[in-house]
Image (cartoon, rainbow, N blue to C red; front, side, top):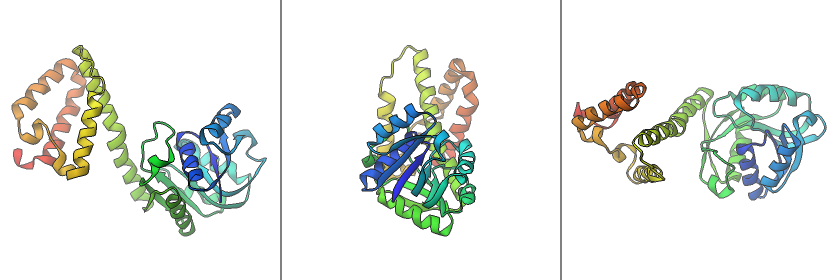
Length: 266
């Protein structure tokens, strides 16, 4: 089936590239401007550029992928209700949080197909191999969604609508907040005139390598895990000097780390 992408940004282009690599056909790549749409076609290496203002022009078929921002999904679905989608077999959005049922008005098998992956850029098909996709939707939509994910060499993970939201929250904590803390750590070093370069990147890689080998529970290191409370207290005072607004969060993270990894170190 042909894949049409409505809102061809980093996620949409990445999915289209992976679908094309699997042998699938890519149809319209839709963006707000023609320049962006043509850029999408070049990025994917296939497809036909189209702008939102011309959505009513083509006759869509196959698969419709809505990969706009969460706040635009419902309005985009409303736009598509007035387009020629009679030959469309399946429609999905790629949000990790939005309910799949907002697509019911299209009167097609529907689903949410959300890759649990950080799209900081358009990625190559090989990078999506083995990635989990949480999927939710109606019965037929789930069947289409599973087949689509497998075509990309991913792993479908069926969840209900509440479970989907819980999973997205957890993913935000792991991926987004981890970067917030990393940025904060770099800023602290800069106050001391230290250029960390890629040191923290290597530190994170080593942590993830430990997680892969021994699991989260056994991968934890550092003064809290060791019960070195004198160090924890001294670093807290140092943080108070450098960034007093961060101390409350530091205290919470210390307590959470103690509970998770060092319950006997009260």
